[in-house]
Length: 368
Image (tube, rainbow, N blue to C red):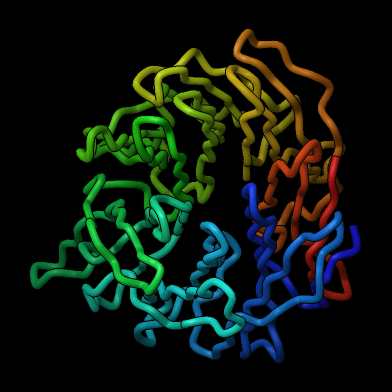
């Protein structure tokens, strides 16, 4: 599909609801000015891009990208804004577009700890009427203490209202992997957040926390890969839900065996089936997942094929049946490719990714 994004664009975020299908991305000018654009899909075509905001003080990173979401015509996005000259010192700033308005309310705070530390890897979903549910990684405890020690990265969540008011902020996990994307889904019981955890002995498997009757459960590993790795793999999970049916896809390289797994839950994440391996070659990860119905999902991922990177998607079910993988695109295997996006729109699956070439990077889109 013809992309509305110009050259020097990257970091796509794709969102779809019953109301709208949205795509946002970042365009860099002269390596100093960052502009966040977005567009809407209408009759199978992307409309002319619209600017959300621009800045010269953003933290622009291949893995920690701005997102866009919508709730009954109310739009919200975010960017990462530098909070000090330190490299990994930045805050999450929210932007809200009220219904029937063309002017974004920008630069709204999500957290108020004011520490010069990392805050990012945001997941945002439509929640209650006129509100959004947000989860993020928060590094306020990683600030160096007088004795030279540092605390761990934390996972937090909150609700954000139509005017940017933040409420019900909560710590979901006090020790997590530092820079893997978070994911969340809405079940019949309430929101669930899924993320890469981190034990004291550096096992970094995927965990879930669930909101049940207004209270959050303790973290629980969804499957014991027992991946021991002393640095963050920068490769977060993705989840999708319908009622209490839940699908989760993730990358692991436990025992030096890189692979992409898929699991299903029929009880909102209380328990999970055994994982199904999705990739058919040397997996890179960078996954996405869609739930088509109880026990059937589509997973997208990147892998190495003939010494090059490819983006593929496949349909799989909870019985372990896997369809024929579809080649979506041949990609650069570098960080510049970022994290491809996937959304279901009617009877089509839409994809967005960053294409890296000698002329520069640009956003590409397609559907199956």
